[in-house]
Image 1: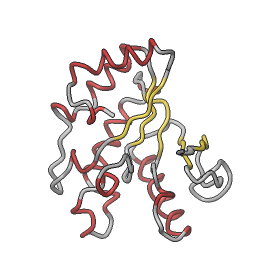
Image 2: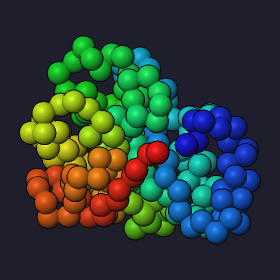
Image 3: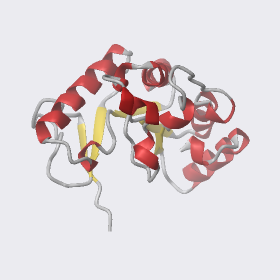
Image 4: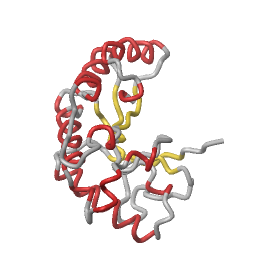
Length: 183
């Protein structure tokens, strides 16, 4: 996650080390609360840039799996959701979300970039929402992501190992299902 190493000058070095260990891809989160802590004030510059991170991955020869949220867990407050989203009706269609989707769309493998897969909603099953609400939110988010020009396959890490979002299983199903079992 580039925001956990806020030194863009080190991103290439880290990417090269990942490649040297035999990996060909890594996941990354986008911490919405950091890039839009105040509603409407979106920043993707300096240590918050994604372009430099994408360039480092490309130069090192590794691919990226985008896991930008909205909710990402990542052991951060509110799963990365800015506090102001709790006071509005539809936070998923606002500026920070739209901005990062556009940046990621431009960095897709189909555009010569390193992003080859997209997790539409990391951690969606971490909530206690009713299953129907989770499905509605997943379908809504996928529509917004496709509308933003994201064309790479969708994936999901199901920490519950219950087949949630497995291909063809339900509305909102994804292209690649993965099980993520924490000890």
